[in-house]
Amino acid sequence: MKTRLATAIFGLCALGFAAAPALADDPDSPEARQSRWQELEKAVFQGKTAGPSNGVVTLQAPERAEDAALVPMTVTLTPADKVKALWLIIDDNPMPVAAHMVFGPAADPHELKFRVRVNAYTNVHAVAQLQDGSLVADAKFVKASGGCSAPMGEGEEAALKGLGEMRLKLAGAAQPGVPVEAKLMVRHPNFNGMQMNQLTRMYTPARYIDKISVSDGAAKVFDLESGISLASNPVLSFGLVPQASGRLRVEVSDSMNTQWSRDFEILHMTD
Amino acid sequence: MSRAKAFDMTRRAFGAGLCLCCLPALARGQPATLEEVGASVFVRRGVDAEADAANLDGIANIGFIIGEQAVLVTESGGSLADGRLLRKMIRDKTDKPIKYVVLSHGHPDHFFGAGAFVEDAPVFIGHHNLPQALEMRGEFYRKRLIGLLGESNVGPVVLPTRIVTGEDEIDLGGRRIAFKAHAPAHTTSDLSMLDRSGGLFFPADLLFVGRIPPLDGSLTGWIAQLEAMRQENYGRTVPGHGPASVDFGPASDALLRYLTTLRDGVRAEIDAGGSIEQAMNHVAQSERSNWKLFDDYNKRNVAEAFSELEWQ
Image 1 (tube, each protein chain N blue to C red):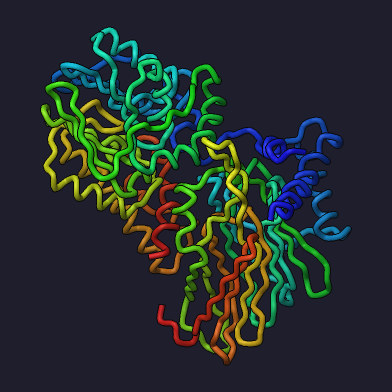
Image 2 (cartoon, each protein chain N blue to C red):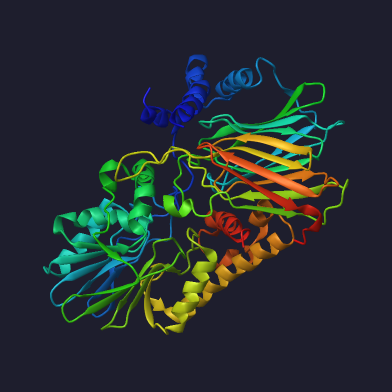
């Protein structure tokens, strides 16, 4: 677990910060931010670059976050054909890739809502992969800081209460073949390994959700990879197309290899 | 590269963020004056502003009670410097030993003054959840406050040495003081205090007057605690923020109205399938003219409330 964290933080840290000073004197200049993005882009997309969104992908994020540890962001997708995948990238976070979603046949990816942590004034990129494999991106600048190292509200013990508990809410009654909006909630503190214990001078070990997989019967809705950039008790809104099975299976795993799963009988949900 | 160093690299300027009471701001308060709100009970009113270098985070109501044998510090102050000012004010009034210092909860504007009293070797009294709250957040708050006030003004995080679980009582000599550890409300470590001889009530930040209350524990919990306190028919009260003393009934009416407006607005938004962003933009806006610093805290209160209530 420790090795994994070290890779995650140090690896991306080097990308996010070490590369910048060599390229620009002021790490906060738009040029330096752009060069950090280009480095990130290279690493995340293996050399491919993302083109302008042309209205296909739109990121909504607050200009200034009210609470850096809970920043709501919405990605709207209006492609001709369904997008294949989506990345939400917070450039200057220690783990910049907040979410990487790959959509399946039971997805209706038109609007996705995330709640993230923002650690420094940063650009945020939403990148969509289209059916032909090309990438398009939209970006916003967000003023917030301290969200990653911000301590949890409660103690460690309290924060781990109900770990892995899940809720699913649908915007309307589910019918096979008719797209519906869903909100998935998972109880998990997403400890980020950046909080120091005052007494022991040790960091609370990182423990965060790294995968969420949602399927309806045999049809995949999405696979999500995430990290410490998701806020604690992650909440994710997405569109899905209910299948005849009516059984939505959610599988969650965290960085300590704990797994949880739950089936929701969505054709019979009254909420 | 050490893990700590990586942490330093990523931790850039702490400008705005989680801290509830130390964002930079405008006002400079009047020179500190003491008000005698009850017999031998003195309160320094905090300024209704965010912490800054001029006010030294002296934004909470702090003070002391002088008994026959000992002095109790009701709230220590928002920084080492603020605590030192309080200590000097105590010494101007009495030579009796400072035997007790209350740490009312885990927010920086209330506990950083404690460092000024370490030399008196008092008993530091706190809620049973306070040690963990300070362990998790103390260092974070300290760094943030150092950025505003400079290291020499901030001082150490002092942990409680007497833990209150449920209720507790001490005697200052002819003057009994009762404590109550509350369930999560304003924070998860709220401690209230009653001066049994004078009848004066000290709810600390369970009661805000005039300044918008930040939510950092549980909204439904806070409403429940407030309603329970209202059954007790408390009279003269020293709120955590606001005038040095108020009547509990009318003062708690306003706070209860804000908290229930927040709760009902957020619940309505959740029931209608609304998003947290929508809720942040309009819930409780009817309360805007009733509270100082409303725009600095209401939206985050809505976000906190939303993430609590959507699980219910």
